[in-house]
Amino acid sequence: MKRATRSHRSEADWQSLIQLQGESGLSVRAFCKRHNIGDQSFYCWRKRLTALPAEVPAIDLVDITSMVSALPSRHWHIELDLGDGIKLNLRQV
Image (tube, rainbow, N blue to C red):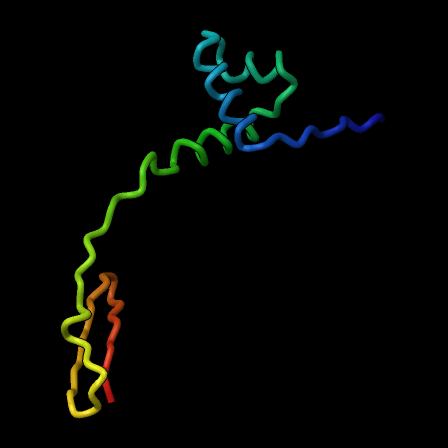
């Protein structure tokens, strides 16, 4: 039995195929059969690409340079709660 050759597609290729399927009016099964694509690969890539955030949310930064001194006599302790139980502690010795 002859083994089918696999085609390695880029993320951009999959994005185009997913868009084409949506515009084609064909079911996923019919579209995949027409384009020689495995159904499971199509579903996997569609899930992966639709799960990506469209835009990374901006973060607010706080300027702490006024709190930091080059003088060794000043002591400071800064604790940042990053969420999910993660805390960042900064100490001046």
